[in-house]
Length: 473
Image 1 (cartoon, helix red, strand yellow):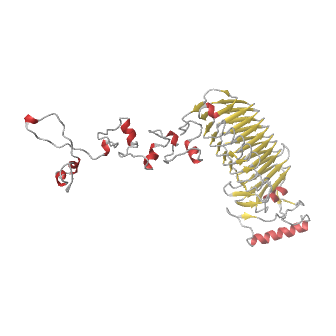
Image 2 (spheres, one colour):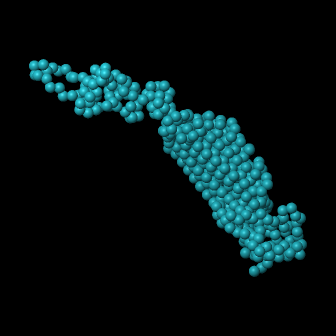
Image 3 (spheres, helix red, strand yellow):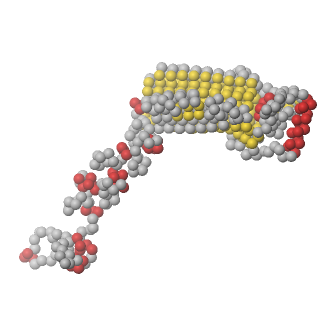
């Protein structure tokens, strides 16, 4: 095995760079002793917070972290162009900066290999030209702090990110400037930005997102999940749900300005903006929307999509609510679009699911049956659902059939022979006694039933006669 000597700067926390071979040899010995003593731990919950150390780069082009390099940054510093950095399970704390190199970074899986931010800088930052190619697979990028705490920065480079999780970054999930790249099978969760693009902010680049999920991302202004100014963006077979803008802004999930978009086979669900474009807002540019669904998105205007000065074509897509609720601005329509006025449990056909309206407190559900009160039966037109009136004791339903008694009787759905506003079928059963009279005195008159006789033979006499009185009266 060929050993490669290196005089590159060794990174330390709070120490000066060491460049001499003598110091490097000393540090290597110190690392060996520490490893023998169990200083370095490995495992799914291991956390590696320690200075980088010099190591012998191997000629196989692969650097293992933490066995051959104690940190990802150390491995990136010593790696040759085109090398692979292989990261064992664990949590690695500290910012990583790569400038002008092509690298492949491979984790053991996003559930076990975690790169966590430290301070107020980006967690992973890659810069260079389109000739530099960055490949990232199987890691989680979390914990960027403050407005500048972005999860990942791609500045001018080409990249490919697969099966990774970008979550909980306060400066946005990903910032991209120029360049070209693809995210495949990635998850963007709970990222937020005080500017635009909670999960992704793109300026002039051309990213593609394939089979990715965007959930619970928030921006202060435009594009709760994604903001793009210029460039070309493809969102293919993705799930985009529960993203939002925080203050009177546009594009609860996606905002594009002078951008070319391809949206295909993607579900936009429960995204929210205050003003316009609950799911998507397009300002200029071009967009082709096909085989997408828009369900339960919300804004004051155009709950699914809004287009201003953009050339937008929609085909073979399903949009929740009537067209007037779902869209705003100018669109060209291809074949196969459906404006679903039943809208997956949208009883008032306003483009927002009943479940969402009730959960957000936008509409009342007093009887707790999961249906807005405005859609429940209200037979007496007093603004209260019948079920709620009965359960609260404001109205009676003596026969327990879900209908207010007075409404049943007035509409002729129930009999009330004695005019007491209680349906007869809810009262004690009435049994007419058998009356035997001489033939000469028989008539067609029906005897008045004695309700007490329904309680058993002879009950009327034991109670003091018929309805005329009780004992002592």
